[in-house]
Amino acid sequence: MKIILAAPRGFCAGVNMAVQSLELALQHYGPPIYVYHEIVHNQHVVQTFEAKGAVFVNSLEEIPSDSTVLFSAHGVSPEIRRVAQDRRLNAIDATCPLVTKVHLEAIKFAKEHYTIVLIGHEGHDEVIGTMGEAPEAIVLVETVEDVDALQYSVDTKLAYLTQTTLSVDDAYRIIQRLRKRFPWIIGPQKEDICYATQNRQEAVRLLCQQADAVIVLGSQNSSNSQRLRELAQEFDRPAYLVDGPDDLKEADFQNLGTILITAGASAPELVVQNTLQWLKDRFNATVEEQEVRKEEVYFPLPKVLRQIVMKS
Image (cartoon, rainbow, N blue to C red; front, side, top):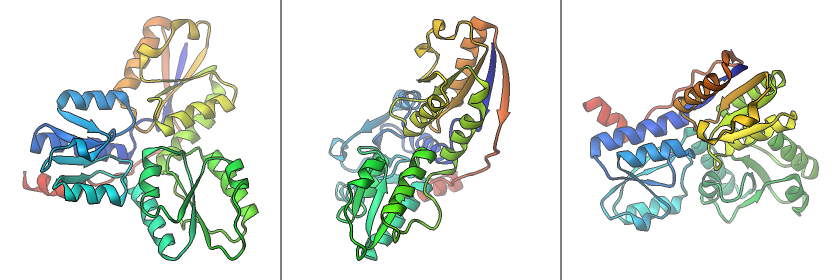
């Protein structure tokens, strides 16, 4: 068996920043550090931090007053920030700057009295946070059919924004339909889908045609990982989205010549290496890394944590 190892893969700059933030918070303040929602959508990362004393909560009411809480990479609404302040929580904001960009765009458009069409997945943490910035001004769409159901006249000021972790192709189709139905609609000055999401999708698009099957390392609730699996399936390749090698079945890979392995933006490299070893042990697999784009993006830690680093 030959393994094509996609690059770039795995942690993006936003995930790196969030993970480093939680590591540093645990070191400096000591456990427990409360985290509002999962720090990133990956079970290995979550379980590793739980073992170190992080406590993941879905409501700020679960957190004792005067505790430290870290907001995850997906961002939160202004209401969550207000509740944290009312409960006297020491809040550390590890929101990805690219998500913050979408929040600021929503605030700007709402202040200018636009109706905002947000392209995203209902219930996703990022979408909940973005809609919370201007709930009265934002309408969520997930599909082209949702766009077709919209009814706006030409005198309605319209703008669109997108969740950062969407399929590039799906988002393009929805944006094209929006522009066809509402030619006066405007969008962000720079597209919202993040560089890492685009790069990992580009790598799968280019490399999966060389492979008989695709393994995507990532959790089921990871939006960007799901998009990688779906993209491989669009090329008629069997695609497996798994947390790690324990989720694989040896029979699925018998008699296959080439496997493409990639990882979603919240999946740690250790899981990738463990999966490579699993395939090497069973199929005497060889590995060839193919890099389609170089990533050199870095996001700084939240200000309060930067100050701690400077003092240490």
